Length: 354
Ligand SMILES: *[C@@H]1O[C@H](CO)[C@@H](O)[C@H](O)[C@H]1NC(C)=O
Ligand SMILES: *[C@@H]1O[C@H](CO)[C@@H](O)[C@H](O)[C@H]1NC(C)=O
Ligand SMILES: *[C@@H]1O[C@H](CO)[C@@H](O)[C@H](O)[C@H]1NC(C)=O
Ligand SMILES: *[C@@H]1O[C@H](CO)[C@@H](O)[C@H](O)[C@H]1NC(C)=O
Image (cartoon, rainbow, N blue to C red; front, side, top):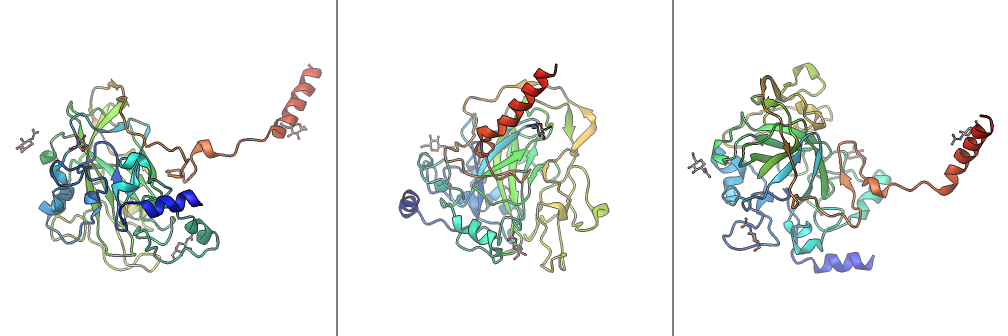
């Protein structure tokens, strides 16, 4: 495809490392240099590894947490609905840069058709390196999450009040990723604080990702407050051991502040890696067991803003979704006309026999 090749050749920056979620409301969207709007920004994608808590917490390591979004910009979370973000190694490959000119199926600005071909032949089995996605294929991708704290001020967010509310298995994979929202209650007036998280499974340094957002629940909001979050627990093959209810994000392999320690091997014979998936007790999709049943709050109806972020998808790029249906529903094949012939025939048959 000529157009595609040209796009790749002219992509203004080599992008090869790590991932973040790009969307309205994100911290350090423009980068971490005051007054500069860096279209090739990869500040939020740097992995966190063996850092002190004051440095890894909300990506303070490069001061990403000190660059909040513009006032009024929020990641909007439709209660009982879904929201889409772009998982990418650099803002250049998202709709937030260059008017989306360099977007493709994957967040590095490439379609990677070769992945499909190799997967079909059963040959996508060794760590992919060309895009540093820490997995050999989609099936093995460890999973990512969003968590929410009902505090507008980042300084008030703690591991206990930052609750994982949505998991998306088999991500990061495609650029577009759709997360489900449970029956979340309304946020304080100045919004909530959210975080995106990922713990890759092998294929590189066993690090973690934590990135901040200002977020806001919209739509018909729920009537229960969230419960206090507890650390998740490794429970592969032993569902009785899983931590039920509201869970914290996974904090591991840091100098301090860890809430998860694992050793030994998983059922596949790999070093245990506490990813956001079944092995750590996270269900796929909206987390519905995170509420404090005794804490009733007022329900409201909050309209989404006209600027609410939903990345355009003119090329019908595939979307990572909970139901594993990678195709945008609008790309499903249309039913050919002849399909209706028997219906018409049967209908007339019925009519004739009335
Ligand atoms: C990011 O840069 C754009 C373009 O210069 C600017 O309009 C916007 O206010 C900046 N955002 C932040 C949070 O500084
Ligand atoms: C993904 O990679 C794993 C590890 O190499 C392999 O066992 C599995 O068969 C692969 N799955 C697909 C769908 O290619
Ligand atoms: C957030 O909390 C910190 C610490 O209490 C305080 O210094 C800061 O002014 C607060 N920020 C806002 C915007 O209220
Ligand atoms: C029409 O009727 C035939 C015979 O009963 C049946 O086999 C066929 O499935 C029907 N077609 C549709 C579209 O319902």
